[in-house]
Image (cartoon, rainbow, N blue to C red; front, side, top):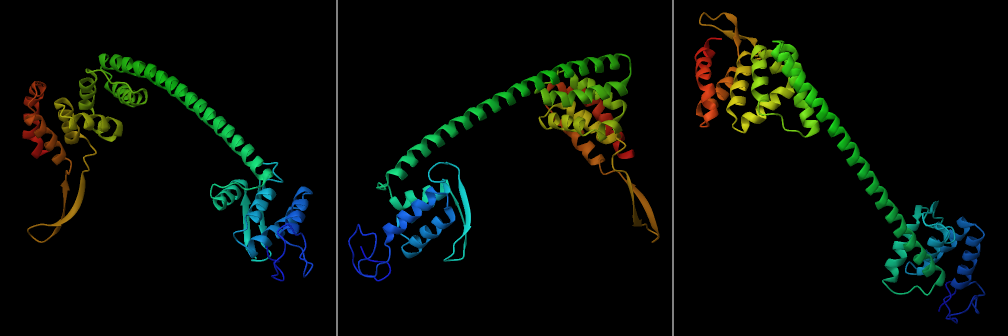
Length: 309
């Protein structure tokens, strides 16, 4: 090898240069290891950085980094934050990145450093165990989530049955307001419990909504329920949706300024949702299913008066 100070060729196992008398890389590594063992990590890092600055391909400096951040091969998750005195750059080191740097330089070859090799074996065993623990915890967490989900689903299903029963009782007592409240609640509970509502539910809810279309129009859950079924070509849902758009007070009635024939500014009322009502009523009439026949007569009557409301 060559002396890093005077450049003269010296024996590979030399600790001091026989020409200038200064220490060789071997002596610097020996000193750095001693500093690391005694816990003087900052001084050790200065030596390792100096070796790397002189020769960026010198793997001993990078192994030295690992020795420091692992606290002399005693920790698998150590880190060190410091400023390089040569480059004046802030440096952050951790065990994982230090190992990756060394292994990249080794390129799959041995390190010829028994302490390093032993640490790598222990590190791999440690990380494998940590991964096993992580997967076990994740499995347990997923199990607990599924258990809670099943419990919530069961609770919501029980609440759904209660809401449907209460709604039917209110409807039988001609208390349509309470029936609507329970039925709209049932829609939400059916989603949470992932339960399909009974076939008779649609018509019960529809009749309740006909009694107060404005309340239905303001309820997003009810409107979403009808719309989803209507888009699936359900004639009952199409009819009730058209009815709600036709009679709901929230048909966005508004006044706006316009200029009449005499040139004066006046106001005029517009019903933008009448078009939506007509659209859904037309779908009922064009629906070819036998069920649609039940709603055609009433739909035609509603279409006749729709232009006059």
